[in-house]
Image (cartoon, rainbow, N blue to C red):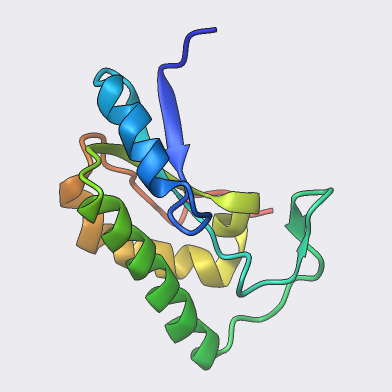
Length: 124
């Protein structure tokens, strides 16, 4: 099997091993796989939210901190990134989408293929 692209989760304990594998395969496109499972109650077998919760203002800050932390770890590990996406489709939550849209402006310069978020993005 040949892989051309991978996404990396920074919060699951295998970041050093992943960095080693990616450095051994320099043509592999690498992205950040944002993990917000610690914030949302997930239905793991279905891979989606157990219930769609309104993202309250205190949660927005918690989400921003979690995403920024993951971006920082990803970049400090020395990855050259091509994209970002999210675990369990968390970006489809309207509250998360608006935060990612805001952070996209901050991090778009580090991505070789900018991930453009627009209002036309289909949620649901």
